[in-house]
Image (cartoon, rainbow, N blue to C red; front, side, top):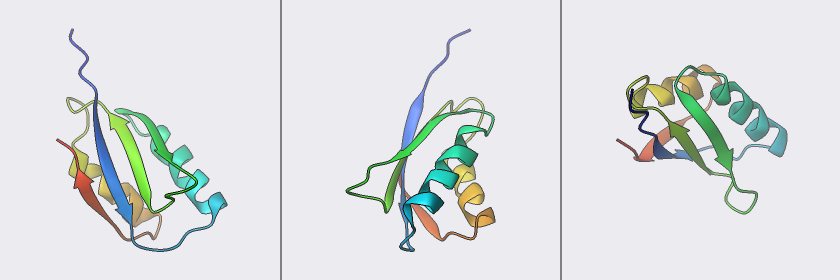
Length: 78
């Protein structure tokens, strides 16, 4: 089985605290098909999500942000 990883850049519209960002990273990392989720401290409004596109689609990642009450949009992904 070939495991192909992809990444998506998600723009977070709100200004979130570091704790809120860490909670989103933790929650996303627990989603089936998500390898990792990370926002850099200098660009907290951008989160890079590494995922397996055979398991989850990039647009499905946005639903996890919405469930957290966060407005976000997909900048890049496959």
